[in-house]
Length: 322
Length: 300
Image 1 (cartoon, rainbow over the protein chains, first blue to last red):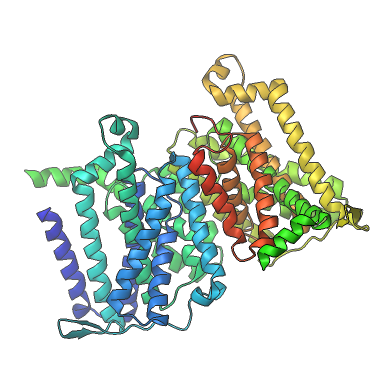
Image 2 (image 1 turned 135 degrees about the vertical axis):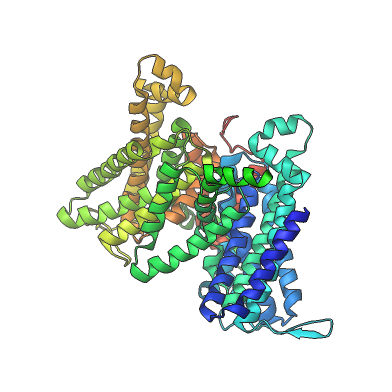
């Protein structure tokens, strides 16, 4: 617990100090984007990696978060933190409703149903034109009023300030996620993943645990979506489409699902790949698909999982113990 | 106001016939895709996420073949068989490697092929939407009955769908091949011990399932627009069909597909804005009362 806080604080501090040593708008925006996507992937990994629940509809909460924050700021001009809070709450409520249906089912039905429910959210977004802008998405920019806190005012309109804002929120979320998976609650989640039937037999209400983690994951996905909407100053129907929900699955698989770090590395790789592939070719899906096939058929595990199991890492960690 | 239209329609024979026809067309195409999905899952235990892409391939094959020689009958057979052969190759090269893998890997491998096939289709046929149009042999005055008009091609889809459903049911429940398939679904090890080549059964079933999805695409090709990514909406609807009908049940897929067809064709009159959500509501209701679908078995 103390170690998590320590490591988290060091990482957060280092990232906040980074722009003072080396500043480039490109790098700042790039890290911001990776952090937001990493939060999306980490939130899904709470389900897939830690609890063994394969959700293909994680885009629903991401989309609800993104659209809520955009609509609130654009049409109702609520305060920034207020909008963010309400947006995340909406995502959580959506997760409760969808979760109540989905957790009743076995893993295959669960995967299909989460995807189908995400599609309902997509349909609503596309059809509810007066509110969401329909096919076009929420365009015209999202205003970002300065945050006033204890008499201080902080304007997240500049890339640098938005970077600080993202670092604090996302690294903060990572720390919370780490607490969750290391807690007794997290231990039960892993037990459910390894054998849900036996977990049930020792008297643990499996479904309730599954629902709770489903909602937690949806909440963080909502935060990630809301941050993305603020970052790109818009929200689009794509955000809720099921292919968006498959993106974090890609990140988890490539990065590795056995640790918190895996999805984060996966998100960085995903962003790098997307940027470079689209620079050279239109056949983006072909290459992403082939990368997936290679990982599934030959590597079997994500990069971080391989590293953690490698001899070098074991020697390093054992020498540290001595 | 729109609800009144729905009641008016239910009261008029011609409107009723028109809507039921369109429901059957939607339902038949969905049934073809969903039955293949259900069959493959029932026997191989793999949920073929890429099934919608096979449907897309069927439509594209039709586009090319019909352009090449113009005979629709030959096209239907060649294009759907082509997708079937593609399925067999796909199973032998990739799917067979993941039978023992966790579910996530199975789903992801199929997902990877959705991406790959979408791009390959773009490479071969280009980005733009294609329209085949109703084949020449069906360009005749529409049939007239119960005060409504039905294009002859629509009748063709319904008849082919019906024949396939019946044949599939007969083959699975009455023939020796069907017996082997059902036995393999139950215990592939036992079937192997009896000297039956299980790999051949797997490849055959995957091929048959792909053929069905391809046939769905072939039949839908002339009445829908064809584009890369057209499989995505079909796979989601097929999922809903098998969730309603029960995974692994062909009869369930049939009932589920027709139900969805009816929901959509009547929903669009009464509730045009939320028509698409209707299908999901139906699914939610079925799941509340029967979590494994209408005809689902205990372990699925």
